[in-house]
Image (cartoon, rainbow, N blue to C red; front, side):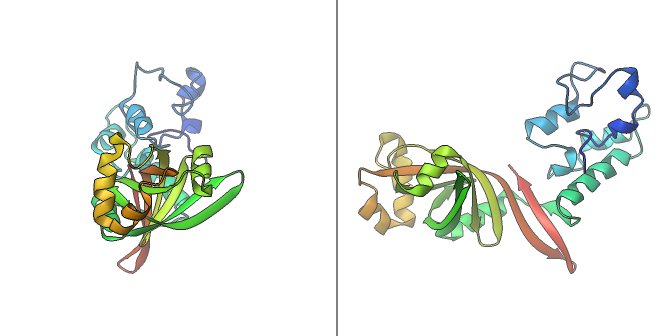
Length: 231
């Protein structure tokens, strides 16, 4: 299914496509109708392809725009965004996943499952971690395969409980570096044995993962729902 706009307007049915030679807001930097568009700016600043991907959908800005007396369409664009989102979710309804749910799961568990990928090879393993909000930290060997893959491709996936998590990884130095003192303090509380045994070894590095997307399958009133959080 082709995404035609950020707000749900069907550009292929818009009179301004030919009249103003408009390619649509997904392909242009500035819309012809003004210096900026609040919905386009908001959507793109959060990395969404359209408003239906936002956990606050439909927000007040989109709703007011849809019911505008002059340019509104009586919520047609909202339903288009909803259809696009449902199509992306294989036709399954979606609901908001709040960050505190993910943080609680990461706090409670001592181990995550980490998947990394580079050179057409995907590998997976358990990792002893701690988290600071929606940032996840662990230590590992600098010459290990996972570290090499992260250097080549920082996009990683992790799972904890029933949460499917995507994020970006960064190698931030040795565990004993002065700038990583916070890491030693927090890692020692959750994994004292690993800290004492491995953290001072010369080949160790700290990896930080910033969480970007979380999904979880749920049942609400007996119906399957995908809870989605974009951060």
